[in-house]
Image 1 (cartoon, rainbow, N blue to C red):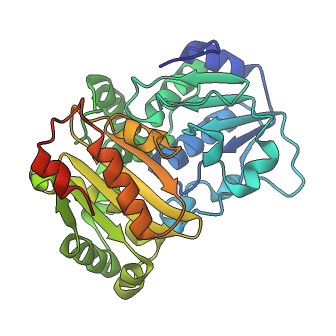
Image 2 (cartoon, rainbow, N blue to C red):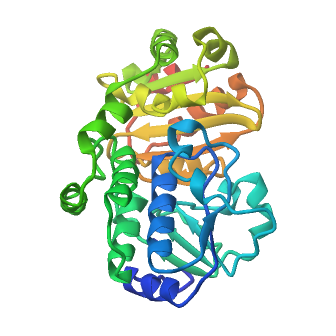
Length: 334
């Protein structure tokens, strides 16, 4: 990670949090299990240590994860003394109602190597597979007791950002932390069933439509899924039903680069999932996004067709990672 600011260790961030109070915790747009689980665990921990701590309500939250933080929503007129962003790599990922705090965020706890260092103090550790791993370390160093309720939300954070421990970012440290969470009362089996083994009928309908309409390029090395509003409406899907859609394209045998494009009010949301050695974050950065080497994202303005052409053009330029043949390069042209 390139950094211009001093990058705090987990110990230093723990000491920083212990020295402050009246916290407001921020989560990112289109919240996932990691940002919400990290926020919930931090809020539980801060309150257990006698701190005043709330989170800013995230307008994109649905019941799937909202249930874990709704008890912490900041009351109207709350004036924070310390604003902490969790799992947020760039100010563009702040929710619209967090815009008033954009220039005064005191600390950022994150694990993205593309972090833009927008907070006054940063604790960014890309070696952590999930931000939940870093939050766990900080809480332990603060002396907070990890209760079963905290163990559950930390498990949600870590398990969802590692694809149920299937992604290459999963490390021995990941498993050691999760083992401790299980020892502390995490309801692992129930959470696994809820998060990874159960889907709604709408989600099943959507999965069939996405796989049925997937387009393949470069001899099957690139898969592109265009999830239009029409496809979503026909499946009867809501945001909760689309939780795992970003990972579907890469699961097809032979796919090295999985591109999932979803129509959103703000533009075309793009999820990039790759196999080594292709850097997903490099692709996303071309469009103002970022993320991890194997998983990244961005938003492209314009139509679905325009976004598809732009992304495939970016993939064609990956000469260093994949030596496309002339036939494969031709196949990437829409």
